[in-house]
Image 1 (cartoon, rainbow, N blue to C red):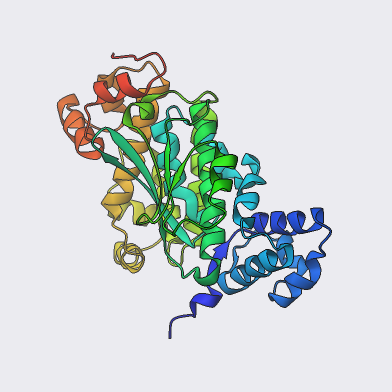
Image 2 (cartoon, rainbow, N blue to C red):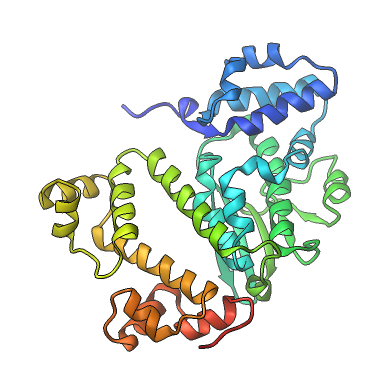
Amino acid sequence: MPASPEHEPAFHPAYLRLVAQLLAEQGIAAEPLLAAAGLPQAALGDDALLPLGACRDLLVRAVSATGNPAFGLDLGASVPVHTHGTLAFAALSAGTVDTALRTLARFATLRTRAVRLDLALEGEEAVLRTHEILPLAEARRIVLDALLVIELRLLEAVLGQDAGQVRCTLPHPAPPWAGQYAGLLLRPVEFAGQCLSLRLPRELLARPCPSQDGETHLLAVRECERRLEASRPGREIAGRVRRLLLEHGAPWPEAAGAAELLHMSPRTLFRRLASAGIRYQSLLDEVRREQAEWWLVHSETSVEAIALKLGFGDPSNFSRTFRRWTGQTPRRYRALHSPDGRTR
């Protein structure tokens, strides 16, 4: 029988610690509210995601105790960027806004499994959408209000400027205190949309991030990947295969060779990957794509040399594969994403 959504891991304790801090700043003791919600004080010091039901209960109790229906906005505004941990390092050190937002979308589940992010291109706009995965129920407005502020502040950090061109939409109707949104965010907010979304001009995706650092980004992404793999049931084997491929490099081992290096039979490797819904070729493609993108953006290595590094004997085959991965040729990708627009 599947676990009740109430007990599903939902939010990182770092955000609940900020709830307790906001309460304390208003002279409200957080301990009784935590206890009533079924959250022992010790749980806030852990690194494991806290259960959905208890988190929702605490948020609703916080709104009641403060008498502030816009508590979610205040919560979002109280979240420093470093609260997002390794995810923040990975996003802020990315080469471009596009890579930063895709990094956020890819690894957001490290901080919350209540929602999922995705970045889509629609005409001349890029849209960062937040999809609700777990039932937020009576805490829905509080959570989405907080996420709106958090995501907008992160977007401003990767843009390196005020996100004045960004349009914000929330899925719930405009509340009586709607004016507080514009006052805090310094922009109008649209209500009654399909989901929480941020829309920005597509051209901004190619903008370099002000704190880009190729080495930091690569290390942070690998750490996020490690944590993500470790957090998913049945995904431990995928993490082991990815680490093997990263350490081995080209010429890449076939699945049977990888199984031998992992001290298991090919049949066992295939069975364990299949149980997690993963194919060996997909993992190999992910590793090759990540390395190709990094070399194109952060090195002056020629496209032909990168093709050889990745095990492509024919550079034209590499170009076709890279275009299948990204929708762009390697040279076009380098011109759009590298800081100096290299085309070599």
